Image 1 (cartoon, rainbow, N blue to C red):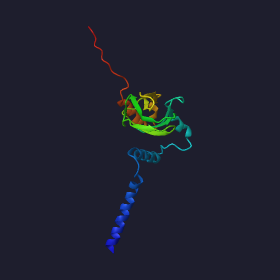
Image 2: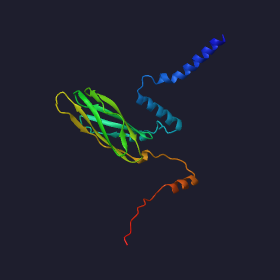
Image 3: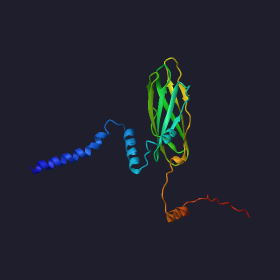
Length: 202
């Protein structure tokens, strides 16, 4: 009887530990990381409230024009050292777009993580494409690129140039509390002036 109780307690413990595992089944690695980041933001109080729609709309950037055959817009999310671009691509033509590829490049201390993949887009359909970018230093950077695709009627590849995405340094800065003594110590440690030595000729 004692042994059966021990087995039941062990099974209950294993079952409770495996609940979190089954929640993540069927999700990609990127979706799992986003879910963990959202949980951390909720725990630390950084998560944007549902009523703050204006702040959410400011994160949506139009990448192409309305008259372009392919319309694209991006939702930009900045985590501490990660930038996630959730790009919506819409085929506005009556043709199937083959080998559609979102090609991105960066300027500044930004580095692309994912390699571009090719997609097939049916007429008047849309596709969500995610791009991960790592940040190595907190300074202003620029993300630019284009969308390349092929159609059955045209032999050459068509290129649609995207608008630039400017990453502002203010996206990395968040309010913090610092005592006067700590502030004075850090102020003394930082070098605010560049020292350049000049040789004097006699």
